Length: 439
Image 1 (cartoon, rainbow, N blue to C red):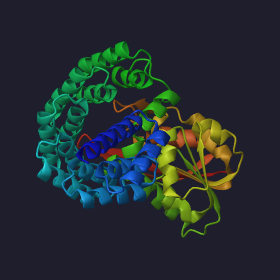
Image 2 (cartoon, rainbow, N blue to C red; image 1 turned 30 degrees about the vertical axis):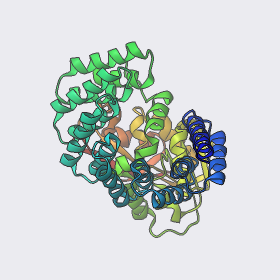
Image 3 (cartoon, rainbow, N blue to C red; image 1 turned 180 degrees about the vertical axis):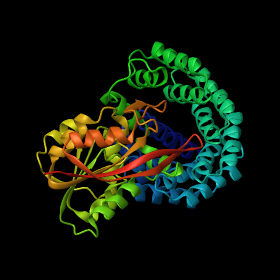
């Protein structure tokens, strides 16, 4: 009897190990079938419930995933890794309080759980508890010193605290651990530039290009930092790479930075059009994860979002407010609309265009007579045209904006100076522009 029990336990362990290997290698249907088969045999096995819950979340079936993990924790209340993944799912769903409680429970069970300390650091940063975030990230790095992401996260929060020298050290450690940690190259170069160490920043981007020749983000940031070979607009590959990378956590990241552009654009729409009637053809140009969508939906009988990033569009789809989502380059898409739109809104998209003449001309052609365009840009106080900032985004002067809008056949009805977000401890100045088709 004992021998049979031991043989069954070994068989169960092997089956679970196979399911986990399939899961880790991305063979999701096969892993799903394996976990489900195990649970038919042993319905209360915490490991199988936990890992199937994680898989369900990856399949965008979050409620099922949460139910499975919570069932695992009912059976095994001290299962630290299940608490950690519960926290991860709750964080992704916006339940920061629940996520924090889950991570704190992990640390109660296992004070040396580096992942939970790192995850708590993320939540502390989102809550503007920056010193607590630093402590959490440093503890995670102490417990698991070989993970570059921990040092990258630490560098980001130190930069927000304007502790730039410490941030430089953190980014350099991330790169020592993984010289191909591309986003540490980007952030390190920007931080060195903030410190006035421009030559070092240029060298960082050049070393990035040695590792990844022709990488679009490296090329763009080198141009931004050096002032050499500055393009008239960010390339499509740069935009896709940048936003696909950050799509998963984009809303949380911007929320932490006090990001105001969608709300300011929506307020400008209300100021221009009054109360919504739900009767307009509306385009969200560069919709990203869809932050503008719910704000302008009341004006729309049909709301389309267009963006270059497939990752961003996947997040926008989750908002459930768009009638249509299109993956396309903005200028060419607008050029094909031929007077079809009543309202075009664009929050934090034209900052990736330097020369605005083509995209604004296309926008004017996409609007019906009397149609309206409302957008945000970052402000260039020198008012000499446009320039590529070291952030990788373009800034535009008021005089340039008025001139290029007029040339496109758009009449400016409002150009309001605003603060769009925080970056590196400083507010980012911008304009919210409202214009309508003339004639």
